Image (cartoon, rainbow, N blue to C red; front, side):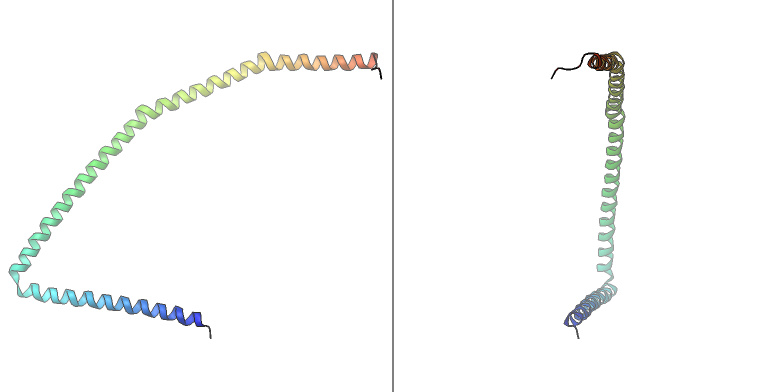
Length: 135
């Protein structure tokens, strides 16, 4: 027999036992509360009125919270439209300018230099054929 299996089973049994005891206590409290409220209608009305007031205040707080959330979302949308979009457009323009500059440098500086260097290498190779190096 494996002692670890027994400890797992005991843990599961303890959990079920604890849940059952808590459920029984909640059921007993609700039963006693129901009997007390049924026998005292004045107390029941008072608790009912108190709960209505609490739920109304809660609904008002939730409504205010939703209104604040909508206002914040509207501000964030406006921020995106007015601040971030122009930044993105400027970035796009900058990238286009950089690409054009690279193309200009490549066509006016790098390609001619590459041709000159290639011609220089061809010329030196041709000279090395006609004029051998001295050792």
